[in-house]
Amino acid sequence: MTHPSFEFTHALCRLPAKSVTDGLRATDQGDPDPLTFVAEHAAYVSALRDAGCDVTVLPADDAFPDSVFIEDPALALNGTAIVLRPGAETRLGEAAALRPALVENMNDVIDLRTDGYVDGGDILCTDTRVLLGLSARTNQRGAEDLRPIVEALGYTLEVLQTPPEILHFKTESSLLDATTVLATPTLAGSGAFKGLNVIETAPKEEAAANAIRVNGYVFLSAGYPKTAQRLQDAGYNLKILNTSQAALVDGGLSCMSLRYSR
Ligand code: CIR
Image (cartoon, rainbow, N blue to C red; front, side, top):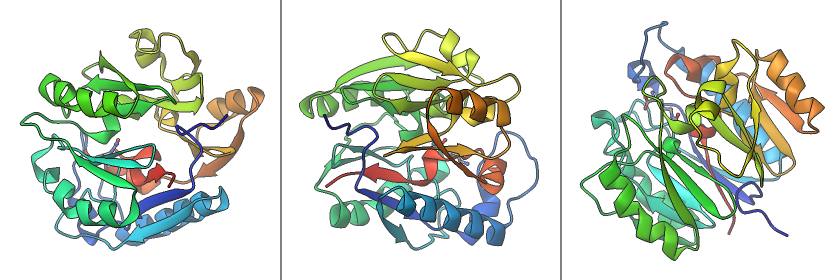
C-alpha cells in the first residue's frame, strides 16, 4: 500500500531571500537573520535528502520576502501541482513566479481559477481526503473553486473553520501517518479531525504542531521535548530541526517545501 500523503520521491524548496526581513508576521519578535536562515534552510534540505527525497532548490526571490514558504502558493497532490491564489497581498505574485518551476518539476500543473483565495498552509491532505481550513488567507470562494480540481484528482474536499487566532490550518496540525495527525488542543477541539486519531502537542508547545511526515521520519522543530517524547512513545522516528528564523516570520517545517512523487 502506498501513501501519497507522506511517501515522497521529490521535494521542491526555495532559498530564503535577503528580503525575508520584510516577511509578514503577526507579532514582531525581531527580524530573522538571513544568513542564519540560510543555514537552517540548508539543514532542512539535507534532512529531506536523508529521508529519501530528490530535492530541487530554487534560487531566492527577493521580490517576495515570504517566498521561502513555498508551500503557500501551490498544492502538491499526488504528483500534480495546483497553482493557488495566496490570500496576502504581498504574496499573491508568488504563484505566477513559482509556476515555471512547477511545470518543469511536476507531472502536471493545474491553475486554480478563482477570484477567491487559498493558501497551501491551510490544506492538510491524507491519502484520500483534503482538509481545507478557512482562515484570514483562505476563503469560501477559493475553497469552492478548488473543489472540482481536488475531486477530479480522486480526493474528497472538507471545508473547515480555522480558529481566528491561528494563521494557517497547518500552523497547528500535521499528518503523522495515514490515520493520525498531530494537532494543538485548540485545533483538535474544533472538531476538524473526524475519523482520524489525534496526538496533541504538550502544554506550552503549540508551535510543535507544524511538523511534517516524510517517508520514515517525522520532522519536528527543536525546543519541544515533551511533544517529541509523545511522538517517540507512539513509535515515530524523529528528525529534530532548528526553525528559529522561520518562526520569527510565522513559518515552520511544512511551509518550506512542496513534497511530491513523480
Ligand atoms: C506569512 O505570513 O505568509 C509568512 N510570513 C509565513 C507563512 C508560513 N506558511 C505556512 O504556515 N504555510
